[in-house]
Amino acid sequence: MANTSLRGRGGAGSPARRSLSAAARAAAKRSERTERPEGGVPAVVAGRTLRPEDPPPAGRAPEPDWEAPGWEGADEEAAEAPARAPGRRRGLLCALLALVAMLGLVAAVLLALEYRDGREAERARAEAAAAARRAAPVVLSYDHRHLDRDFAAARGHLTGAFRDEYRRTTTSVVAPTARKYRGVVKATVVEPPGGGDPAVSVVSASPDRAVVLLFVNQVTTSTQVSGPRVDLNRVRMTLARTSGGWKVSAVDAL
Image (tube, rainbow, N blue to C red):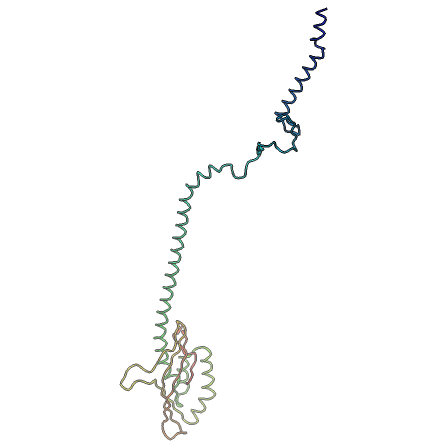
């Protein structure tokens, strides 16, 4: 009877053994759920079940499952930064030196051009003044006895449109009047009584163009006057540089 009673209480099919087995399985499931909270399976923490949508328990910060962008390799970049700094400074210094050298070269070229233009302008002043002094007596003089020769010589000192205008004026106006009244005009550039340079002044000059002011006396004789007539004139001549030298491109009586 005693054996029968013992088997009845502790056998595999007894209620007590079945209760212990169920408790063990429940504990194993709770342990498994606590270790694997992912996938929507609730976890047991401090005697209560946590679900994914529940906030984390107080006093425990959630662990991030991501890394801030740029953190990877930050230590390597920080170590390389001091090594790159001297190279950047050297590059900046080289760029500044190149800029200074370029500015110096530009300044030297500009000074050279200015000096060249100044020298050419000074030479143009001298050459234009000499050309005007030679041209004035020829262009402003004529003799009725050899007008064609005089006009041809004058045209040799002229250029451009003024040369053509001079030809038309002398052919249609001056020549007929000079032949009719036997006119003779002799022009000279004024010179100081005690000697010295003729009265010629350069108003402006560039390498290719110049304006010259001259004091010119003209002595005229003809059948219309009883004796020689002297005209004291101020003449402004504009000259241009050509392949044949400085030529007169305009004459204005002032």
